[in-house]
Length: 326
Image 1 (cartoon, one colour):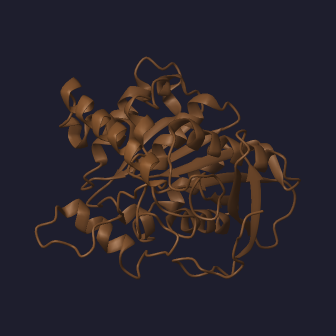
Image 2 (cartoon, rainbow, N blue to C red; image 1 turned 180 degrees about the horizontal axis):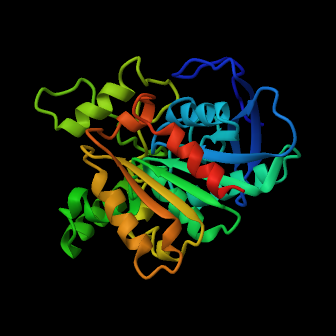
C-alpha cells in the first residue's frame, strides 16, 4: 500500500471551485500509481476527463497538479499522477525512467478514468508537460481511447539522451561513449549495492550557468516550485535511470496519430525545437493532419509553461478539449 499524504502540499493554492481527492491505480506491470483527482464542484453526470503528467523529474504536486486543477475549474474531471518509480507512486528501484513503462503509465490513467462512473469513457484526453509531453504523444500513437492530447513545453527524452541538446552529440562515437559510461556505472552500482543519483538541478547556481539551467533553478530550487519529493528539486534521477532512452526512440509512429493533438511551446524556450520538429514529423504524410496544431507562445521560456497562469493558454486548451471530446 502506498504512503500518501492527505495534506495540501502543492506548489499552487487550492481552488474553491474544485473538489480534490486522492486515488490509486495500477499499470499493466503491476506498479501502483498515486494520483490527485480534481472534480468541478456541483458537477453532474458523466464528465469529459483528462489525465495529466510531467514535467520530467517533477511530481504531481507541481505543474501537473496546477494544470489538472485549472482544467477542472473549466469543467473537466482531471487526474494528475506520479509516474512509476517517483513521487508517491510505487515501483522499485526508485528514480528510474522507461520509455515503455512511462508511456504505459498514461495508458493506465486512461484505464482508471474509463472505469469511473462519473467519466464518459468516450471523452478522455491527456496532457503531458516537458518530458511527459513526448510520452503523451507516444501514448496517443498507441492508445486509440485517447481522443485528444496536449503536449506542453515538450521534450523528446529519447532524442536528447541519444543525440544531446540540439543534436550536438549525434554520432556513433558519442553514443558509444555514453553507453560505455553507463555500463561502467551499472557495475559500480552492483558493487555498492545502491544506485548512484545523478543530481537534480545544480545548486548553488554558478554565475556562468547557461540560461536554461538558470530557468530550471528559478523553478525547482526556489519557493516558486520546490517540492521535497521532486527529483529535480533534490537528488535527481539515478545515473543509469534514463539509459534505455538511448536505444528506444519514442515518436516513431507519431505521424499515425489519428486523434487531435495540440502542441504548445514558448518561443524563447531552449527546448522549442523539440515541439517544432515533433509537430512537423507528426503531420508529415498523415491523412489526419487537420486536427493537429502547433501553438508558439511569443516570448515565453521553458518553465513559463510550468506555472505562469498568465502565460499558459488554459482557455485555448479548454476550447481544444471541448471541441475534440464530444
